[in-house]
Image (cartoon, rainbow, N blue to C red):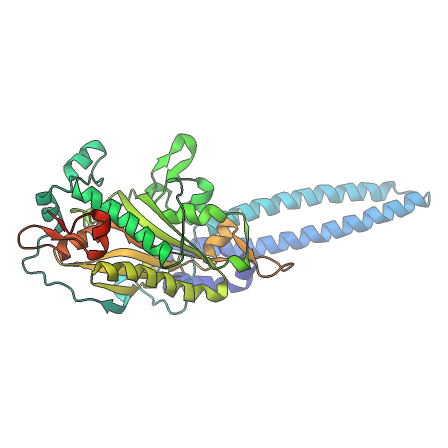
Length: 424
């Protein structure tokens, strides 16, 4: 949510920000209406305040006249009339503010100045790690998984529909191993507190982290209960502190959680639908951080480094991409994507997005902190990053570590959790 007070003098900045995101044409009408409502709101506030001041003055004069046994009937009538005018103005103001809030919920965050303009093609590869395996002779993960009998897509589709996965045997153990190892890494070495959160969220929580109202059609909903299956643990973890004020001494605060994630839009337009590349339900370990505005960028680098550590210890070659404006998520001000190399499909696959939302989510969810005792609360900055998403990570493991005999070597860090050195 954008700061209304800031917008009054910076609507042109917001317009330029939407241009950088490639959204100006689509949002032009909304931005025009926001400008009108900001002007209308200012006039209504001024008129209301003036009427209230006049009513207060009249009330004091009525009291003086009564005390002096002077006639106050005309003034009393005028004071009552002012009350009716104030009520009408306050009604108009409430309607104006409601419309303004509704429109602002549809406007994305402003990206930071170092985020490039343009779409996916304008993303900047900042660094790479590891040596990608050559594609020659490497089979796609779905073939390897089928031969090892660790992935059953047909039965997943039978029980739930296309885009839902069944892992079997060693595949199921691999999922469990990844969950335990990632959580242990982030809690023991990176300083995160582990939390186990609901896999559903209410409308207020979804709105607080920007999934609603913009993306309601992409959500799986429990309509009778006004609950939604979460698309990421970011929703429930961030909203742990909705409508709360944190102590500055507790910042930065860092949390990590495992959850399944549910996304209706997976596989849209038939893109990358083979195997584990795009699914409707998947497992993920998510990192969430709360911090002060001054420390926000440093925390983004920290959370990205923690996600990179997962890939490095798995021995999977990857690259870090700074997303361009039109490719940056609705609520994010700056995002790094971590893309792992999958030689069997010959593609870089996103396995983590690490973002700072500045105070955009915090304003919607009203999450603040008090800089010092007695000082006015400020909005925190929220950040999150996948650490990591499982399906594409598993795809990369099966393709990077496959052997000519059909078996798959298990990354060393997972062997104590999996209880085996190979999948066979």
